Image (tube, each protein chain N blue to C red):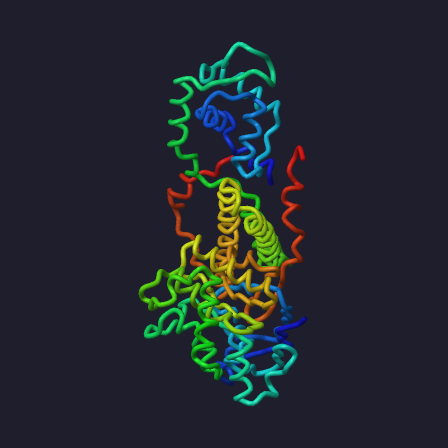
Length: 201
Length: 240
């Protein structure tokens, strides 16, 4: 789960945000990144330095002070970096087309496979998701009162999982209704919307 | 210690071909200090389960035991006493009496149980104070926010020596931050030894429970495994 989360976090922009508060060392950036995200999104120090080198190459950060290399090298954000950060914060992520979701696929397949009760398949996933939500809620209950960053990250995770549970509930209800009252055959031609909304890869 | 036990409980409304089977052979055990959430879609029997567990309705079959005592063997008066002293109810729409202040609403169940008005009011104020509402004690329900009204309702449900709290969509009308406060309060009651049953279709509410039971078409079809503890989430992190 965490690997997936790290993949969607923009490390360059997170580092620019931290540097917008003032010059910092690489190791300090890593520690602050983890602390601000409730230590839910880990970052290895190599990733921090590689990213800083790229940001420096692109003129978005620059060396702060002459002393030291490696862990002791300090960085500060440039005017170009501040502009890039401000633009990124206001740019919505691309959510315009549905992702290829493994769970959606499994439910779609389960409907077609003989001898498989799709409602049992849905319940197995629902139980797993609720168990995960219980664990996140326990983290929030125990620690989030003292850590705003953690509370925000845990909320985001709970709402994401909740959305999946709601989709399963809706699918459950829709399939139950379809079993009693099957939908009418699809009229030709295929609606344009269906072709237009392509799945993300 | 088992506070609530349902043994093969069924409930049928109506007769013959039009009969509706709201519950079919439900078994459920809730211990002291345990919070159980019952999740299911509309019409799955959640609310019926709660009203039967709270002795507000009789089952068509099976047995309900509260604190080890079977409800079927109790007189109407004994059941009424159980509802006043042992069981607290929290409803989605709060069910506060508009003509009474917050403190009077909370003290009401104690007064109905024969406790002197002064002592009941003192216990009510203590319960409100415990939920951070001491400053709102003399306000009427329409002078309180939705979140405050539900906290008053929880204070009323938990006042005295209640051992079982039954909540039906307790935060249904509230935003998510106020809903979280409500669940925290129910959880704190749990830590004091109260058994709590929450029925909801909301997974975020249910996730506060120690155990989630899934109801479908009047049957318990599944339940969550015991919680492994929050460290298990953190243990899966790379580089730790």
